[in-house]
Length: 467
Image (cartoon, rainbow, N blue to C red; front, side, top):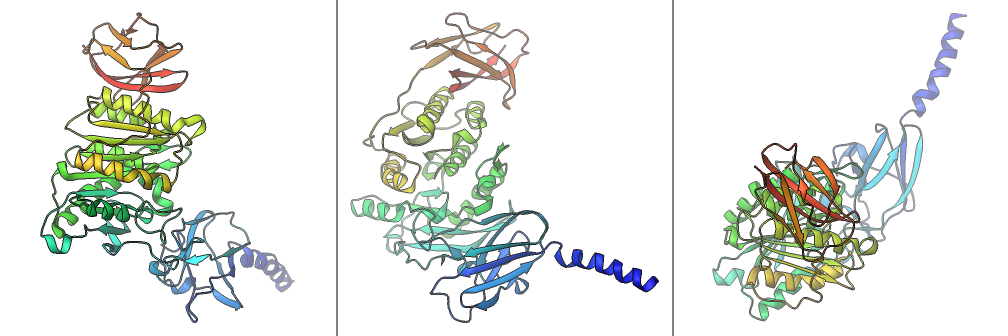
């Protein structure tokens, strides 16, 4: 009887042991140019992102089918397929960069069928001869990660003996090469080579790949509760404390802030704006393309709180076809006004909206040459459509005693205000009435921020002092 009970217990437990935590990844198709005899691996957050882990080789099932069964912890999984290294990682349909695959694993038996569309870089490189990969695995000590770094050297770098200004760019996969891009390239190398032929003195461009699944976290110092963020400080510290010193030591650079710029688009524009304001001792130029200011309202309060500390040049663009109802342009207008309120002059801030502008690499590629010339050569540029400044506000006196007065060139209806602490905490809010001023009763002496909204849309943020 005891043996029978033991057998029943084993039968009851055995299926659980067999089925718990088994995830099968099944490839049904691989690229035709996959080298014969190459193993296919899977690398992800379940094996430390090791691209050549012998325990994570898929087994051939006949034809183009491959399969592996793994036992990851339940939760959000991220992974990619490789042929044993990050140099042989899978790509998108055009042979370009493919973001990390994601899967929400429930913890039970599950089979997922997938296809590999290409191997990255086998779609044919479009990078110019004076573009090279500085490192496939440049170590980022502030984040304990590695990242691919690209570098563009001016056509006469090897023969001139000159030193050059430097531009640091985000989303390096999309800067020079269509073969590694996610949705097209900026054609920065082609544009700069053409400008060089026309007499430009040249610039070094250092492009940093985004971190795939870590991109959102790295490109914002502030956390968006729906999307993430929070590692932007560490990412910018990597550029300032690790990458820039390396570039200055190993290449002929003009290392001073007056010769150093930063540029990016979308979230890359957000983190570039943060870096430029936070490190005005390092950067004097910022190209901010279609920036995702919506991601964190703190980007405005950061500009207002830090203020102008040195002469700068900001080049902002946004397209009317970006965001709901042209929301990207409205966000840019608010940042334009906030930069002016922070002390930067109209000669230091250029903002342009384009009627055909979209959230896309082709748009940023088209606008890059004008941005570069204005930022680095100080020349005028033909702006398709200058930004509409909207409602211009002046706050006085500053410092203020019991009231902060508000003056506007035009006084629209339905204005609201918020008084915030320097770290963005709302202390009081209300309707803004023409001629009435904002009462400061109850606020202790110190520095504060005032934000003005029109029908819920941010117009400007400015710093003021309460006596």
